[in-house]
Image (cartoon, rainbow, N blue to C red; front, side, top):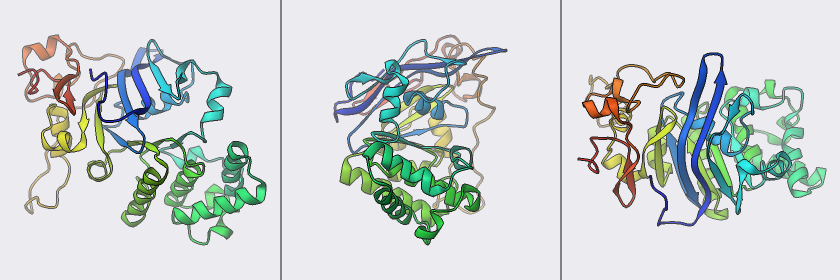
Amino acid sequence: MLTKDPYHEAVLTVRDLRTFFRTDDGVVRAVDGVSFSVGRGETLGIVGESGSGKSVACLSALGLVPRPPAYHPSGEVWYGGRDLLQCSERELEALRGDRLAMIFQDPLTSLNPYLRISRQLTEVLEVHKGASRAEARRGAIGMLERVGIPDPARRIDQYPHQFSGGMRQRVMIAMALLCQPEVLFADEPTTALDVTIQAQILELIADLRQSTGTAVVLVTHDLGVVAGSTDRVAVMYAGRIVETGATEAVFARPQHPYTRGLLASTPRIDTPPGSRLEAIPGLPPDLGHLPSGCPFHPRCGRVVDRCREEDPSLTVVSAAHAAACWNSEATA
């Protein structure tokens, strides 16, 4: 496991985070020993298939996973000299939306259908910045304009159902950026957007990083976005990080078969016409009944007996790269 990042002073540090859910079928290990950090002005990308634990890890860091049914058998989330997992709900409410913000994956269920967009945006500035209603309205309209909402002065008084899916996503992004947070969790922020608006939003987040030093944790399935927008990347599978490091290093020399599979399944502009994309065989494991050894071994084309018996831990490949695989360069 990488215990110290030599390249930056971390703004947020997550250590050995575990988030389990008690269900009728047993305990589901949604996040199982995840550790990462992100520095001021840095972007960490978290990638992996649906169900790999990316969103739950981010929600857990912000204290947004209901307990019960969730519980944390271990873990620390350090921000501003405090372990957020030990903070009271009142302390977390003072930080969330102000110093710590999140762009949620599903804006339809994240926005209150009974309130106008204006109230949902201005409340953020009134509560966290002490802005007057008029100041908050001006700030909200300005941010709606920055995220590409046409005629924001008129549309701010509409309800969420009067916006398209992409427009609601932009409202969510505006809400998260209003207070210029120190740490921004962005969970699939551009999924519902066309490529033009997607580029605009990514540029807006990049501008925020440069102007205010915001640290960004970007959760996405789009490896193209990761390649162009992140400094470091963490690949998650079955609730744990199986490979992490500088984005350039991971993309140039992927060590884990799962990372190689994700990269091979991504369309490339230089692929010859008629070529078929590779696919990762099988399905992600049941997090309530994980296989013995490495969780990826039932789907791996390079499996050996040791993979079926022993679960590898993250092993340093180079100064900026680590992988949890018995066949990586570090264990070869």
